[in-house]
Length: 87
Ligand SMILES: [Zn+2]
Ligand SMILES: [Zn+2]
Image 1 (cartoon, rainbow, N blue to C red):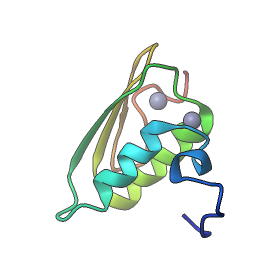
Image 2 (image 1 turned 180 degrees about the vertical axis):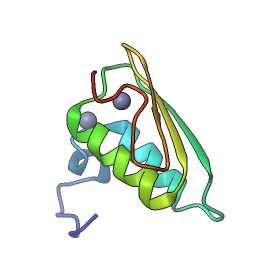
Image 3 (image 1 turned 30 degrees about the horizontal axis):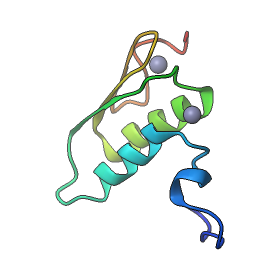
Image 4 (image 1 turned 90 degrees about the vertical axis):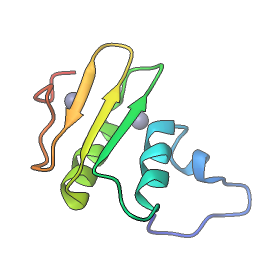
């Protein structure tokens, strides 16, 4: 988060309802930071979340698995995803 919340905003609305981002963020503020995060999502992951998750995996040097409606995305610490961005 790079800005503070307005009165009528929640963390979820700022993340445009993309619950997987919220789950990942909540995982990462825990101590100690996990090396593996798994998220299950009912809908297809969007490009924004996909890019964001790749960056998080790289910064945190952790593995993140997001299972969405279509496939399983495995984000590696090198910033790549198992789907090769075909999703
Ligand atoms: Zn999204
Ligand atoms: Zn992917």
